[in-house]
Image (cartoon, rainbow, N blue to C red; front, side, top):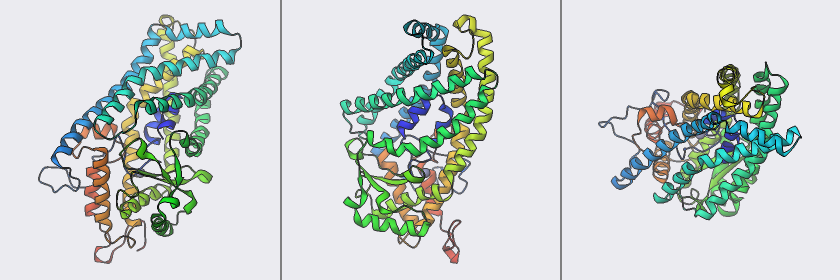
Length: 446
Ligand SMILES: [Zn+2]
């Protein structure tokens, strides 16, 4: 989903991604995760409580150090992205690029292509140091095993896709602004919704550009049979030929399994760092969690939530952008919002809104992730001997592989985590036993 993230991010719908990206992803979150209030059932994480997610002292030290770097990179990167747009506005660089595009060609749409190509190239270059440093640290801590050649290759591919698809999206949005200068935010809102759905649908078809996929059956026929048991219990319609093994081991030591796509592109993907490396029972739990997102309709619910939120966000951003152009237009050499450079003002405001609304979007996401955790544990009941133990073991494996901090800072959790923290999730799993005394779970009758 990294690609879809960069694509949409670049494509100005930054706000959406903050929460949308994590959803179709994994049972864990490589670079994130945790909630305070929303996951009520977990006991408080204080020193006196027995914690379900633990690391050896050396790994703990690494996890704490690495988490700090990740958090700083994420927050600093987001702020830098906003500041960068502003610097180029304040130095009227955007209006300069627009004038340059006009000198190159008289065709309006070609001017747009030139301008937005420049826009994506510059913003990508601006964020490259953060991405580079993130990869450098990830390699240092033994999570990433990808060489620099391959890494830069992936960045180039992602940029290529962004240039093509992102430019098309921004051309469309910019055209809407020009066509309906007063009510454009409503048109942009209408256009965003099918683009989101299309992104979810197309994403699995673009993934092979970055990673190799093979039929899971070919490598782990036994696991496929076990997964089919969970499929039968959950009533999801994912036949074995929609189960893939991703060759992640060429790039990372991290663990992951996820469901992606919608409709005809729906599939389950298990990384080859996961199948065979952790017990099958734990893969079943992760799969159960992912199935939960589908069975509980999290994707349509998330889309509906974003649709409602974006309606107000676009409306508010349109008002702010108009005010900025009135107030600073002369200084930034921008006459109107519908010009190319004027459109960047709108992108600038949207990226600020995306940053400020990240906690709200993450709270939304954490709620769904918690539900999926419950669902995952219930889905493997009767299939594995002890769902509680399996889930706790899986969280320990995931947390250790990604070096997740067992006691993250509560503010950081609130702001950045789109999944509850590994500790919160493991503690919940350790105590979740609805079958005790003949009861049953929330989502299954037995
Ligand atoms: Zn999930």
